[in-house]
Image (cartoon, rainbow, N blue to C red; front, side, top):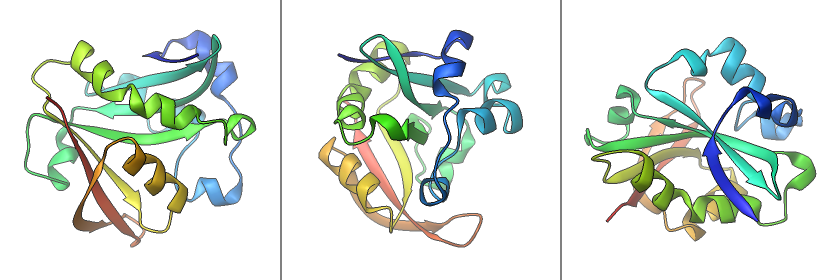
Length: 159
């Protein structure tokens, strides 16, 4: 059974997996997020752990900061960042199940949020398919990543 929960330090060892070169183009490791980007110390960000059968197998960041305004002028949006699933558990539908729970998780844990936004590399086909299958809509807007790559902006409206 797939569940979403707020990260705690007991999850670190299970989430400290390596990504291959291709995956590293599109997402970050938990080590980078915690020890380099300092996401745990950013009051606008929460690390969300993806649990499968009581074991942490992935994570993502929910960001309430101002970066979302680079994607859309909506103060009541939340930004989904850095979705990562352990390569040993990929292909089992865990990401899709996690994303299908995202709306309810946000509505239960955050006030006044009416939209989830994300940017995804145009050529990350598997991630694009995952997000679209979870109800995200391609806004047809694009931005450039810090490294100059095209990113598509996707949106999921909350009721």
